[in-house]
Every structure is written in C-alpha cells, then in structure tokens.
Length: 126
Image (cartoon, rainbow, N blue to C red; front, top):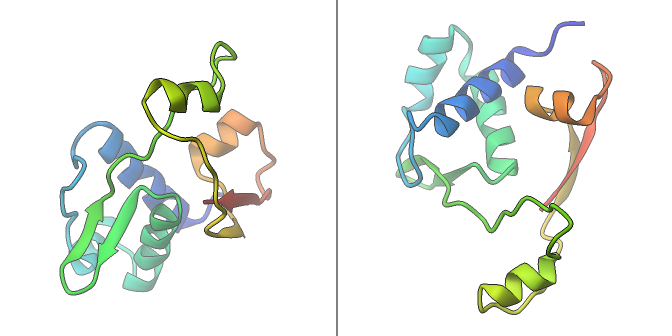
C-alpha cells in the first residue's frame, strides 16, 4: 500500500527544513502556492501542514501565516545522561506536562526508524 499524498508532502517539507531551505522563524509559502507546487488540493496540503504542526515543526500564526517553529529541547538519549541530568546541566528544572496526544499516520522517517508496517499508526504525544 502506497503512503498517502499528505505524508509525502509532510516528508518533503520536513526535508526542506532539515536542509535549511526553510530556517527556524521563516514563513513558509502560502497554502495556495504549496498546493500548486505539489499539485494537490488545499485540503490535502492542510493535512500535511497540520501533521507538521502536531509534531511541533511548524506553527500557525493567525493572520500572519505558517512558520518554522523554534526547536524544542531535544537531545539524543545515548544512555550517558538522563533527561533530568541534561536539564540540570542546562540550568533548568526538569518537568513534564501532557499537552496533547493523538493517533495518526507515521512519517517516512518514523516508519523507517521504528520499523513499522505500512498500515501502522503512531501515537503522538506533546
């Protein structure tokens, strides 16, 4: 089963961000422009943008557009330092709070990293 079009668009925009086509704080092109670029309806494009928003990669600003979100604290957990130790080392107090959770389709990189079946869903927690 082929992955949905919106996931392909999601993966391309994410790659563009990773390759610095769009940098943190940059406004991405308008929905209409992106829909034309990818040859899809605005509804399909919105689904891809929403998925990127849910992952914290993009953020919408009412009346202004959609921007590349600032990076959240992320650290590769290698087993050498715990989250608490990393947080303390950065002069912060560790804490956690569940903001949202939802089930959705995984991105291409998530499928590869987690070795998921083509029809698998993932739980996204923020």
